[in-house]
Length: 138
Image (cartoon, rainbow, N blue to C red; front, side, top):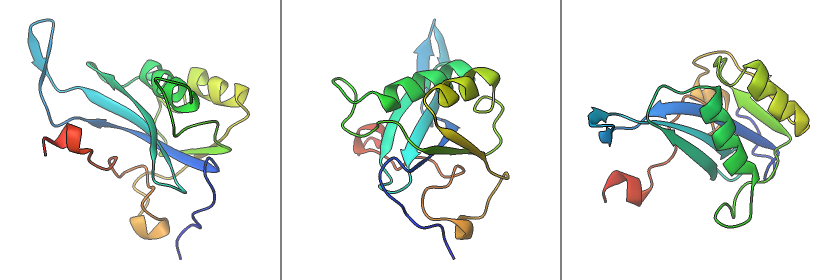
């Protein structure tokens, strides 16, 4: 049985993924990393941070900041979740990131790695965010 969907901003999940594109960073071709937060009730991506280097606590904080803000140019999704689920990623569980979530009164749930999709619904940390037509070239 899967997890119940709940309500908007009840539970978010977060992860990093390397984008399948090359970008020029100081004259070198690199594949950027995307850090995102997904609202589990709506499957909406609350926001992302795109960084040229490996993901870090800074990219987590940048994505979190964008995700909780709802005024322009952020939103309309977002807000402050009750809980954020992470898949044991050290960047998400760093003292800095957990302190920011604690300041917002957000509970952090540390999930086991490679949790099967049958354990939940489409909002699993190992799933990449849905492809946006602007990102996929369609």
